[in-house]
Length: 201
Image 1 (tube, rainbow, N blue to C red):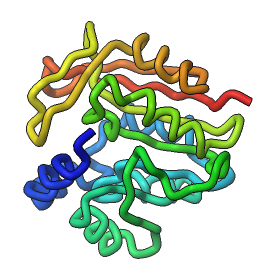
Image 2 (image 1 turned 90 degrees about the vertical axis):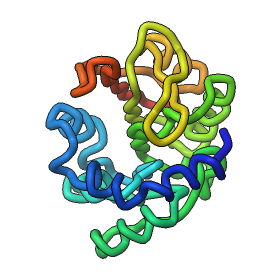
Image 3 (image 1 turned 90 degrees about the horizontal axis):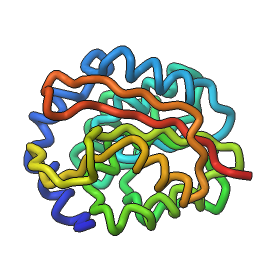
Image 4 (image 1 turned 180 degrees about the vertical axis):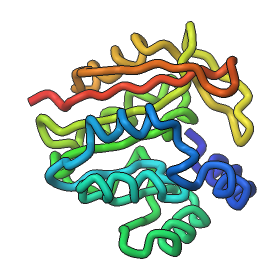
């Protein structure tokens, strides 16, 4: 993944992105409920990877999780720190997490994997598994599709794919699916999917 290109693309539209998506009220209730079921009240550190404006990190904190938001876009981290001053937010990337092996109790990767090219996704998931303690939870949100394919995302190239394909990749990385959901989006061409999984012991 060209992280510099992704960073520049989101930085260029950061203010608009924050206005459109940067609050809990902008998140579908089914998505908030799914996240709450699988990460709410998690005991131990929870990482919100690709936290963007920080609203879902704050949501996790209101659910009792010790959540830290991580994003590669400085403008998002700056906004999150100002909007949610009681939270913790820092710069970072998905492929090199600043966390010790098996030190994390939960991870939220809500649409933060969509810009990872499919040939690189297994390595990123392996990094997530490296930091996740056995039995720890992972929740992934992504764009559903009949096949793994790129599409023209409004910010930069993104990828969608079937739930079964994502579940299989998670299994190869050492996660076991425990639940998933699928729902249509406002844009009928981009249905939404989410998977909850636990790290193998």
